[in-house]
Amino acid sequence: MNILVTAGNTQTPIDRVRCITNIFSGRTGTRIARTACERGHGVTLLTSQPEIVNEVQNSPAPGASGSWQVVTYRTFDDLEARMSELIPRIRFDAIVHAAAVSDYRLAGIFSQTAEGMKDASAGKVKSSHPELWLRLLPTPKLIDKVRKDWGFRGTLVKFKLEVGVSEDELLAIAERSRIQSGADLMAANTLDGMHEWAYVGAGAGGYLKIQRDRLAEHLLDQIDRKH
Image (tube, rainbow, N blue to C red; front, side, top):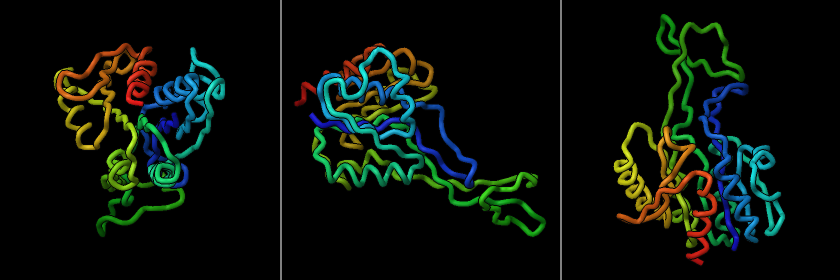
């Protein structure tokens, strides 16, 4: 089986030396990719954190059984470009979209002056501004493009994380999100529980709560069954 796994996080550049990002490291996606390689699958890992590959424990080195390719990205635009190039060109049997993708992109940097808002964009925004305003606009959902724009017909796995919701609320949100993206499987968790468990499944009553250290194996079991 040929599998694409996205991992890591996207950066939203403010200038050439600063960016906005999130707390996620890419370890979950990397573990899934390495476990898939151990099972003999061909794996393309699309990650912003290639150094994590050698840090993930309790899994074999890439290339131990299956084939292995690491493709890197940094920004949202990088990730979108890589996915739009790889997915239509390579016949993937499954895509696991575990990357933590920016929900917003920068649309301007402004400083308040006596004359009103002034564009403060620069290669390195000066630290002398008493106050800065960042204008952010929503990014498109890359997971929604996988089938609609890039024509993928294989098994699609989506990840969803929520904050401040109950487990019942999480499952309801996750299922609506899965359907919207046309994903076959959803892996969902909360920020508070993300190091301990995740729900994996599809459909009402079809989710199973999995311990975090079993997530990669369980998810790949589900993908293997579909093939």
